[in-house]
Length: 342
Image 1 (cartoon, rainbow, N blue to C red):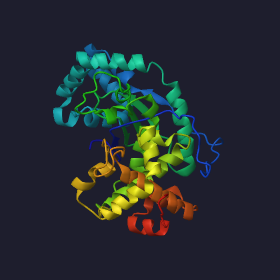
Image 2: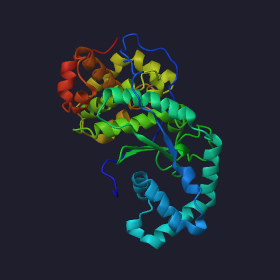
Image 3: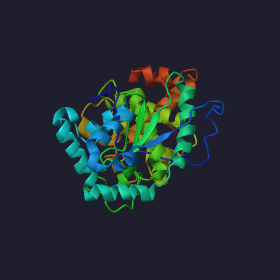
Image 4: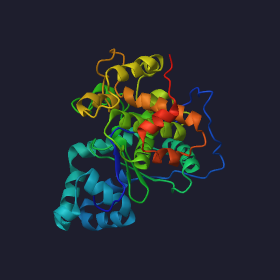
């Protein structure tokens, strides 16, 4: 990829911090002394404010002012590559994007729904304090918003850039989300409430990288670690938002933890590498195969989260970085002494 060494896309992105009851056993650190203010650059406003009669010069000035973000946004998000197209064709293609009626309407809709993002800066600032608490050596992310014609919800790029695609958060009732790409179980978390969560998901994806192995156990523990990290960075966010479930689905998982674990064991799924059989257990899906209809998709991720919580309860001195670096899912499972709730 161009001008980038770290690049993680999270196609479904995130929320403000909601008030909720917090688990009594949760240890939430005091981060009030940590300074980590989020400052949002509204790149979509800067881009659509360019004078298209002088686009070559104005576009070059915009790219010079924001080189890291531009180096990801144009070639990787919009698919407009200067290296591939050449300078003249590149400018023409950007111009075509800016003047295309559907894109202009999308930009106008973005300004209508999100005229101001002070609330997002406030929520991200709170999140970044926890981020700096657990990862003090990491710089505070620089946040950019953009539109992409529904291509990407959030990404982490080179230079500690965190991008958030505002057109992914217009709400489940927005009429122009194509149901072929955005079915109801996806659309229900494409709203303001889930914006911060999906942005944090992109950060955590970048921190953790890909799973080491191909077994369901490898994937579920890896995704469980990510959910655990998200829980630490957003300790006051409801589990239903973190999981992108409905409240009823979250409650179903809590009530059927033992049954789900028995299902994975009896169906011999833990060590399966057949992605066709395990995909819906770890990816966004309307359901989990061979489970009751009330069971949501990605139930293996939920179980992996419970395993990681069990491990961290036994070894509370483990840092977040040490947890990330634990790549042996089998060893983590054994050391967790995980026992599902009945």
